[in-house]
Length: 251
Image 1 (spheres, rainbow, N blue to C red):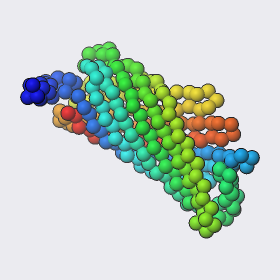
Image 2 (cartoon, one colour):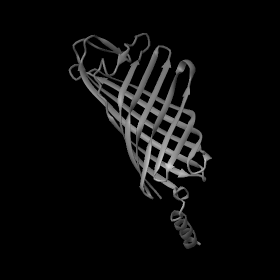
Image 3 (cartoon, rainbow, N blue to C red):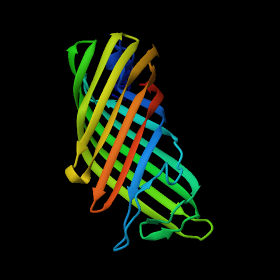
């Protein structure tokens, strides 16, 4: 019985139609991001200062790795798991006193900043073959989990404070692909959700995939990730934009 199943799996993988052979796809990406982030964090009756991580804290841009695992759940549907993390850091001498999560960092104080991002998601899509083999489009439903961890510390005074923002939420969107020739795929997707006065999230990308050999895909494109969360007078805003490159293998 086991031998029969293995032979059946091998025949599927070697089938002439490469769309059937895409049972599992493992992709690695590298995203060259531009960071636009700001926050205000209060503590009790102590007001917080609105901080721009780039302008006020001199936090640099960073490049983020991502891994994606995709399973075919049917001829036109698939299940995808993705995980990305990154660290943005900076150091500066403050031009004015600031308040962050109840802590005071005085003017002319050197402040080191760490901004850590952890982003995981699981999603399912079913793409209707509008033009079989050439054009597909369909809904994308995801559950996203995001953690933003911001830490400010002053080496000279020993003052250190962190603010942790964990979030989990469902999103909806769409995914499409255009295949002008068998070795080239043009793709785009967008998913997001608005929470009214509590904020929003949008994750969108577009690019091209090149398939030089049957089980290997190379990709490049541009991506936008925009999230804003508000609660009372506290808020956090994070926007990442930039090109990405990637490669995947299919089994």
